[in-house]
Image 1 (cartoon, rainbow, N blue to C red):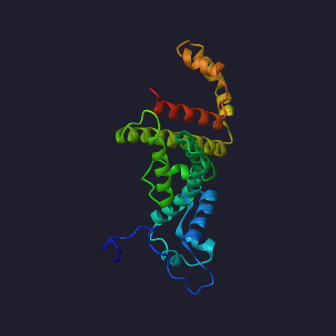
Image 2 (cartoon, rainbow, N blue to C red):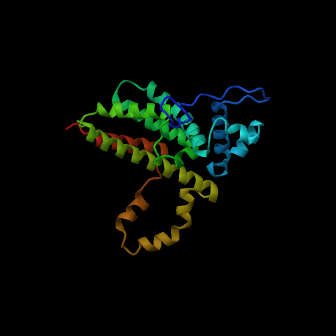
Image 3 (cartoon, one colour):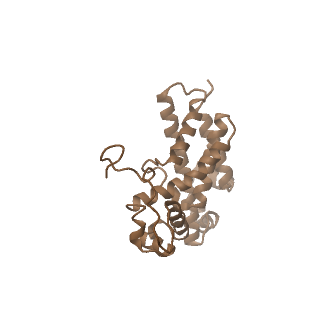
Amino acid sequence: MDTPYGSEALPVWERPEPRPRAAPVALSRARIAATAIRLADEHGLDNLSVRKIAKELGVGPMRLYDYVLNRSELLDLMIDDVHAGIAEAGRRAEADWRATVLAIARATRAAALEHEWFADLLGGRPHLGPHALAIGEATAAAFSQAPGVRGIEDLQRVLGAFNAFLAGAIRREVTERRTTRATGTDEAAFQKSLGPYLTRMLATGRYPTVARLVIDGAHLNPEETFNHNLATIVDGLTPTT
């Protein structure tokens, strides 16, 4: 396909929408993405297919290929749609660099809890849609103003550590939620079921620090834990001295 860039194929975000067709059902990439997101929320990514989306929209599957060439493009649209809400949270944050970073991180967690499939795609291939790029710009620009970030290498390291924490913390929380649903047993019930075994093991005296955590440790609230760890990570990455 000839494009302004020669024969290079344009990504889905830059291709114009197909011309409207005289058909009972009007389509757009936005409508396709919204339908795909709803189905993924209900049934997960593994059960998502172009055929199921087409059926939900009341059209033949081939019509969707006028708008997205393959599953990867469909995921790109879905991901960037979710990123749109995160980007808005970043724009609403105060001008302070730290407030911006915290707002983006909290909005990312909220989006992943609302759309659990989104957590599966964190930390994978780069997300380069317009809204994802806006978040990347806002995050990088904020960290570049932080104390201790003196150049591009500092900024790269800070962003790498921050994104690793964010993806890891969110994916772990979503995994725990899924496990609770699948087994019908939450973390407290799981620990209780293994209580007799754990008591015997701790009684050996070989695991004194684990014993302290089990006996004296509190059952932490996920949101409070995320916010505490987020602040610790951000402040640790940007020391004032």
